[in-house]
Image (cartoon, rainbow, N blue to C red; front, side, top):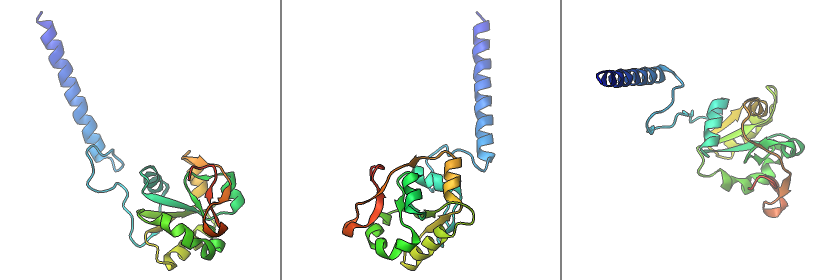
Length: 176
């Protein structure tokens, strides 16, 4: 009979010690999990824009706080793209921006992407957006390759006419 209280107290001691150790390790890690509702986001965005890393882009995607703009060709967009992304290549910016502009409102970040470390299209698109007064524009450098490598959500579908004046820019099969 005296053995049961001893086992229970030792078990509770192990549990308390394990929890204390786990919380300590989590607190010391730079990428630790938030254990309480954070007053501020885990993603710290530079207000002047610039490049964004894949981790921050993925967090903004998951929480729905960013809109992604695909700067690649229409064929590449149709083959596959970031789920929910809008197609807006730099050469079509003047023709399509006013139609896409309302979809940028209320987002913490506008993230442009293309493919490959030497692809200039996402930077060109970001420059057009900033020139049009859009704030918090970020470039996901080598975006498409990184997105796929991390196995983040993608969609396939044809960029169809769905915007006013017959402009293309939404994905037929993406539920947009």
